[in-house]
Image 1 (cartoon, rainbow, N blue to C red):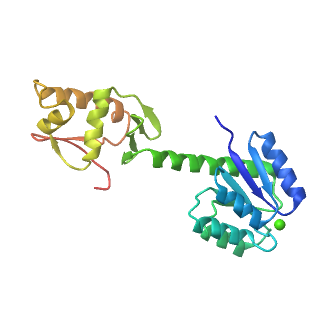
Image 2 (cartoon, rainbow, N blue to C red):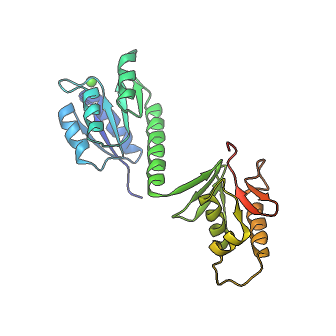
Image 3 (cartoon, helix red, strand yellow):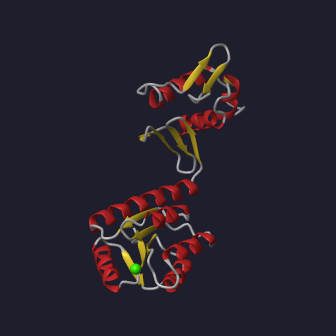
Length: 232
Ligand code: CA
C-alpha cells in the first residue's frame, strides 16, 4: 500500500520539525510548509491524504487557507492546530470545513489518533463514492464489489443469492411477485417452478435475517416477497 501523504502547514519551524519527525516515524510521507501562501499552493497541487493546518499563520491565516481550499472544492481532510481556548477559531474552522482540530500544546499520541481517524473516515467516504451502496436498515449491498454486510458483519452469498438480494434491494418496500423475481433473477427462459424462488428466499434469509432481531425479508401471502425498511 502506498504511504499516506501528509502536508504540515506550520510557521513555527521547531513544531513543524517535531511533527514531521513523529509522522515519518509512524510511516507517513510528510512535507512541511511554513507559510499560508506556500501551504495553500501545495494543497492545491493535490495528492495529499491529509493536511495539518496551523491557524495562527502570519499574513494568510490558517482559516483563510482553509476557506480557499474548500472554495477550490478540494476535499482533502484538514485537521486544524489551534491555540488553547480559541473557541472562535475552532467554531469558524469547523464551519469552514475542517474535519477536526487539535488544541496546542497537544500530545503527539492524540494527534496521531486523530490523523488515523480522519484518514479512516475519508477512505470510507472515498470507497462509498466509488461504490454504489444499497441500504435497508443495517443491511448494505456493495454493488460493484459484490459484497454484503449486515450490522457490519460480512455475509457470503452465492452469485444467485446476490442477484436475488440485489433485485429485492433495488425494489425495497415494493412487493414483488414470484414471477417477477423469477423472470428477473433466473430469466424468462428458465423453465422451472416458481418454488425455486421460495427456496432461494429461504437460503437468503438464513444468511441475512435469521441471526438478527429484525427480519428484513417479508412474505406477502399469496403475492410474493418484499424487503422492507423499518421506517416504512
Ligand atoms: Ca503559528
